[in-house]
Length: 66
Image (tube, rainbow, N blue to C red; front, side):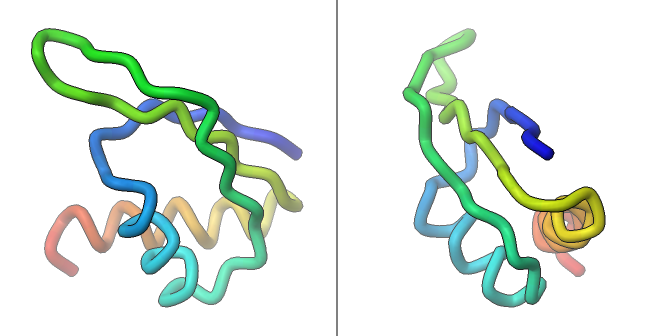
């Protein structure tokens, strides 16, 4: 399964979140864009559905201060 996200989170921080979540996914930065003055990374997330969901849960918690 593959998901693509746009995020202002730096790739190094995404790697940390992936490690802390324990998710077995592969992250690939596809490029960068700027929207309304905010730099965003296009990131491809690859893995099985359960692992991607685990990573996304970790991402939501990290960004919410959890």
